Amino acid sequence: MSDAPPNQALFEQQQMLLGALCDAWTSVQANAAIADQQSWPVAQYQRGLQAYRSNAALLAQRVLAAAFPTARRLMGDESFDGLAVHFWRTHPPEKGDLAQWGGELETFLRAIPELMQHEPYLPDVVALEWALHAGQTAADSASADPVPLALIESEFPIVELVGGKNLEDISDIQPERALVYRQGFQTACISIPKDAPI
Image (cartoon, rainbow, N blue to C red; front, side, top):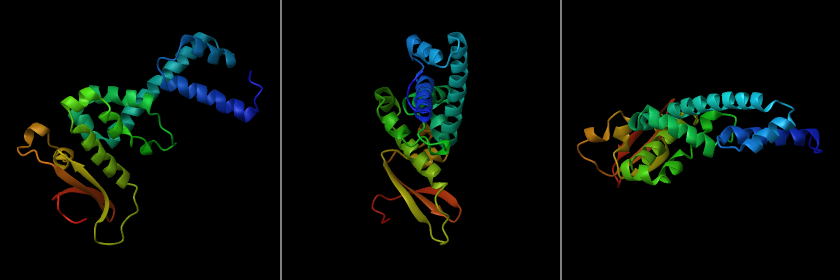
């Protein structure tokens, strides 16, 4: 048992458990050390840890699917769900409100060479979806005029993709500026010309 003050010891235990939850490849020795520290049988600890990991994986899939429905549709459920679990393990939530988790997904996708080769539009789609998602918690506008929230430049027609189309259904693939705005209680996006003033 650690000689650290009780609060510090609890914090360290929580950090070890979080590390084990997010890292499916935590070593047997590390898991045994955690179990021993808590005076738990290792087998019991492993079963409990697996249950927590399974719940965390399902939660990651649900949270990201809610924020990025278009990305999930374009990738397919199985691929997206696997990505969500990997993203959870490498970029775990840092805030208690899981609705605020997912902002780093665009950067995460851009670092996957295979994805950028075969689906280079996905990071831009994710950027647009995150702006729309984040805009849901923006302050309501008292003005009848729309309030700009984000502007996303893309080489792809991401507004149409987020609107429900697939890339193969779009006849004219052109670079696009997507404007995300808040008007009253609603957050929406439109495609605007490259030279349009904001």
